[in-house]
Amino acid sequence: MTALKNKPQNDPSRHDATDTFYNMPTRLTGEREERLRLGSTTLGYHVTFLDDLLRGIFAHDLVLVGAPSGMGKTDLALGVAIANALKERKVAYFALEAEPRELERRQKFSWISAEAYGRNIPRKGELNYADWYAGNCEDIIGSLDAEADKWFGNNLALLWTFYRGQRFDKGDLRKQVEKIAPLVDLIIIDHLHYVDADQDETNEHTAIGETTKAIRDISLLIGKPIVLVAHLRKRDQRAKTLVPTLDDFHGSSNITKIATQVITIGPSSVIEAPKWHLAPTFISVLKDRRAGAPPFVALTMFDRRTRRYEDTYSLGRLIKGGTEWEQIKPGDRPGWANGFKQMELDV
Image (cartoon, rainbow, N blue to C red; front, side, top):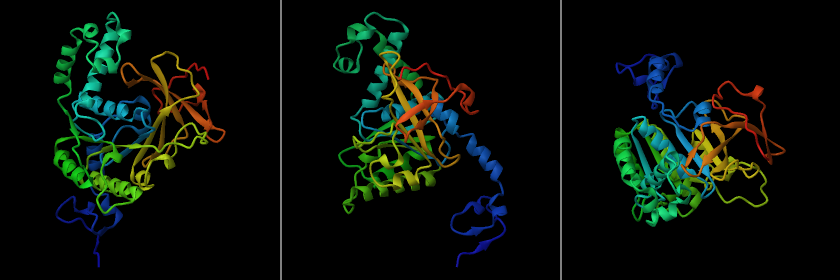
C-alpha cells in the first residue's frame, strides 16, 4: 500500500514526489521559493499577443503550435528560437522536416532582406528567397552576405539546430532530447508528424498520440519547456469557420489533451492587406491550462520580407458560428493587452 506522509523527509524536496501521498500543507512547503525560481526562468514568445496573453513560456510547458501547410508554423517557431537566443537563452531546435541548413539559410535571407530595406539599397524589391538561393542576387546584396555571417557568429551561437537522418522515431527523439536538455533552456520540435512510427504502430493516429505522450513525459522529466509544431488536417471545403479548432489537428486527440497551451495561426481571408508585403494573420489560443482560453482571436500582420510579426495587434470575437470576426472597441480592451491597437480595416 502507498504510504501517507504528513511530514517532509530529510530531503526538503521529497514532498514533491509523485510516488506517494502527502497532505496539501506539506506539499506547500517551499512552494513560494520554487515558484519564484521557476518564474525567473520564463522565456518569451516574442510575438506580442502571445506574450501579453500567456505571459511567456514557463518550465514544464508543452506548447502546441498548429497551422495549415505552408502557413508559417516554422516562421513562428524559428522566431521564438532566435528571439530567445538573442536574449542569451540557450535553444535547441529539432528541424525534422527541413533539409540541412534550411533554417540557417532562411534566417540569413530574412536578415539580408531586412537590412536591404532598412538601408534602402537599390533594387531591394527584386530580392526573393528562390533567386537568392540560386545565387542570382549577389549583385544586389553586395557585402550583406558577409555581414550576415558575422551577425550570426556574434548573436546566434546559443541556438543549436538538429536535422534528422533517414529514420528518426520517438526513441531517437527521447535520446537526443535527454542529451541536449541539460545544456539548454528551451527545446523546439518541428514537427510532430516527422517523428517516425515504431514498427508495431500501424495506426497513424495511435502512433502520433504515443509520440505526443512521450514528448510530454520528456518535458516533465527534464523540467524544460518544449514547443511542439504540428500539422492541421486539410479542412473540408464546407467548413466556414475562420480559425481552426482543436479538432483540426491532424492525428489523435491526445495531441491537444496533453499540451498545456495550444496555439493556431492562419490567414485572415476576410481582411484586406494594407500593403503588398503584409499578410493579415489570425492567432488564436485554443487552450491555456493556466488561465483558460480567451474569448478573443488576435489579428496581426506578418511581414513577408522579414518573416516577422508586427509588434501590435487587434482583438476580435468570432460571431455567427465562427464565420465572421468582429473587432472589439477600444473601450473593451482587456487589461493584459498592452500591444492592442485598433486597426483601420477594409473588410
